[in-house]
Length: 287
Image 1 (cartoon, helix red, strand yellow):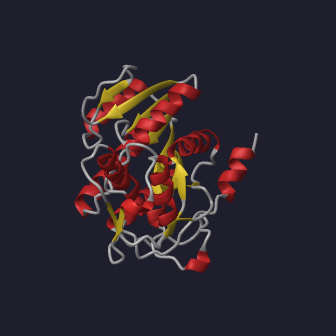
Image 2 (tube, rainbow, N blue to C red; image 1 turned 180 degrees about the horizontal axis):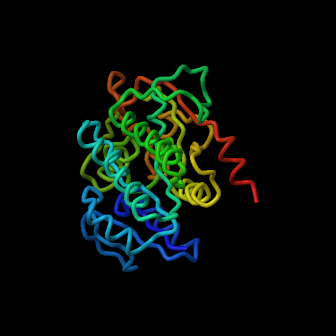
Image 3 (cartoon, rainbow, N blue to C red; image 1 turned 90 degrees about the vertical axis):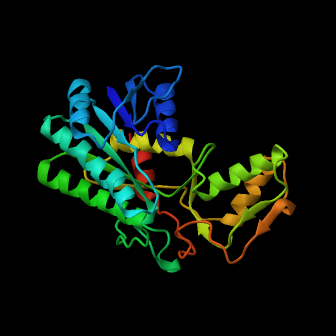
């Protein structure tokens, strides 16, 4: 099997490519927008916005499996539309126009669910999509593209709707990434305090390594046209998570400056959200 991972220089793509190298016998290739150096010599430069360039690559590689992890969460409409919707459409069109039988996994987000009531947890995959951010809207639009191309053109697409990830090297736009940066500043002597917003919210966090194993399972075993939540299946308070990160770094809560009026995420209006992973569990326990 030949596997293509788009966005392979990003947080998810980087970890996923490592997982595939170490856990499969497949020929794996990472796709990046700008050149990067690694010891595996298994990345290629291609701008997903350039349809002609992408067509030539897809036609040459004819990948059996494509993981579309490229994207953005800027909450700027033009940026997120281009990177999450238009680039995904380019991939789907390229597969369709080259008459390939590639299985495609699209990376969704819990932000698609948007505003929910506490009693609607755990959230199932058939819960109405009600995004309250531009990023969430763009991911919901990506899901609609998957539905359209599966039903209308017969493409083989599955969706992995990810909740919150934990791992080293996350973007500083996300709570875990910002905390990691501030912890490193304290450990290096550059700072003596960590500043965070209100920590009352509860989210569903899953380690990136576990998530990558689920992505591969969904990609190889999931049913075409279906969406699978990827999460732990239980809520974790942000204060609890912060304490865990501090403990791992050998620090205690005395270094934290909490601004109760501040926000840690662009979706802080949602007080609690966590996934129903029944569908994922059935898939991963099946033969």
